Amino acid sequence: MRVADQRTMARNDPMISVVTPSFNQGPYIEQTIRSVLHQNYGHVEHIVVDGGSTDDTVDILSRYPHIIWVSEKDRGQADALNKGLAMAQGDIIGWINSDDYYRDNIFASVVAHFRRTDAKWLVGNLANLFEGGSEGVFRQSPKVTFDALVRDPDIVRQQPTFFRKEALMCVGAWNTDRYMAMDYDLWVRLARVAPPMMVDEDWAYFRNHAAQKSGHANILRQSAEITAILRREKVASRLIASHRIKKSWYWAKGLAKERLINLGIVPQRYRIRAIRQK
Image 1 (spheres, rainbow, N blue to C red):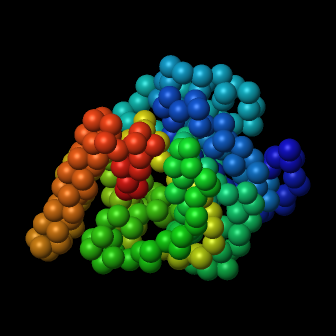
Image 2 (cartoon, rainbow, N blue to C red; image 1 turned 90 degrees about the vertical axis):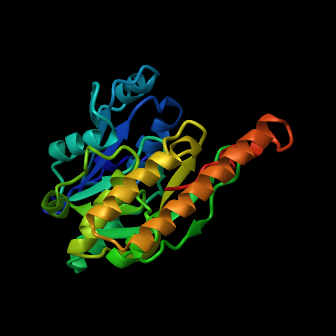
């Protein structure tokens, strides 16, 4: 395996700092780590901020001496991300969760886009993966603007997104008051400053699985957080109401599917497909 830290790179090349918040994702985190290693760009650091996992996560992290990591209790995912950002030495920040991963050999392109533009952040394309299914199909990410985000919060595609560190610091990074919508909250604040550059390239994979935070059980909590963000931004009441209705429908549909699965009417293999991307 060719790893990033074995390649010779000019020290004036911008560093990419990849931050991975983690908690009890032992079955998946090694693939996340290897996806950062399998890149065509050598000036990279990978920071894992683990919330005190009780599975084999720490054992896995210990096998990779290039990783900068800490394992301790924190105040949630946004707190972990802010810790990682404070540790980061790079000018470019990637955020990949411990159950998601990057496509091979994308970092050189990410750096090239930042070098030739003044973009504050970039959004590439994403593939959704379902456990037990085949590798997902990449789809072009929806165009992101402030107006598009308030019309449809579900356009957030966090995994294939990279930021200039200075832009994150300028808007205050991640809001620790948000448990479900810290990505959406960040995007709204960044989009008020400048919309991202949309890059039609395939960059990352989002894994759908039963233990993830963005499952059916948290849809209503996510909706409440998004509603609070929209109110803060003084968005029209009709848009807020439309969002709440849509999320309530997702929740009701997911609940009905779970009950049909539990009754044996719908096969178990469809349980994971009740999970929606945020």
